[in-house]
Amino acid sequence: MLTTREAGRLVGRSDGAVRKALMRGRLAGQRYRDQRDHRDYWLVRAGDVLSWAENNPKGHGPILPLPRTEEVAELLREYGSASAEEVSQLLQVHIGNARKYLAILGTQGRAKRGPDGQWVLVTDAEGAA
Image 1 (tube, helix red, strand yellow):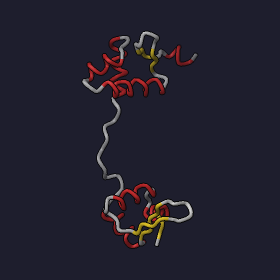
Image 2 (cartoon, one colour):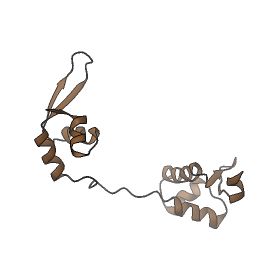
Image 3 (cartoon, helix red, strand yellow):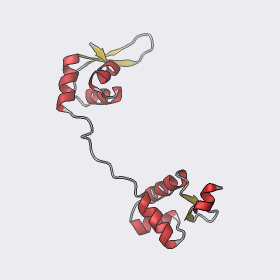
């Protein structure tokens, strides 16, 4: 019997992926509670893990959309500045996503937010300072 960490290592997966498969019933295992720390643990058979991994290839989950940061950068280049609300309307995305795309550009040092809430692209001269 293997722990979820050992099972994950056996098949090149994270222990979280193994636990998720166990919780969803896609992988058979035994759940037990440690009386010392009162935590639940799983034990699985090596053969079951190998079979699960063979029938569930890595990376075949839902494909997540890439952030639209390049589109936002192009909007800032075209308009000179924009607020999160304007980006939201122009790209027809939720305001939270618009804020996220702008924050990503900010973290990358490619854009900055002014005191008026408007975002602008950072010029090469500003980035070097």
